[in-house]
Image (cartoon, rainbow, N blue to C red; front, side):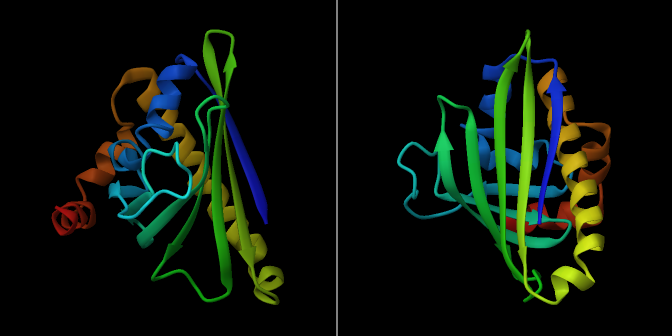
Length: 173
């Protein structure tokens, strides 16, 4: 399954790239689905990447991500993700950010590729696609607010005040 969500962000390309590229490990600062995030230990697969990946405490449980591709000149970062609570029929999950200049702003595209095993791809694929679409829309909207204002979205602020988010931040501190 593949799903792409695109938004135009009223912020310069370099500013948006700084958030998703060089500051990749800080998604917990702005993404409402990520309670807290930090750099994953290890040597990066891609020499120019800011880290090997990141660890995140999310609304779906803990995830470990690995940067698979990173191109600062093309403003692209791609990473695979896995988590303890990810169902066994989910064979792979990869997300790619691609940024391009759009006038004085930035066109941001987020593409999710999910490898779902048969027969679950048929039985549950449509439902998972709807859930992924909602999550991607929220994430790219959170990025838009953060890049344009320098502050987390109202949704992120609300999530950060939750007991789950507070506990997650304490567990990674």
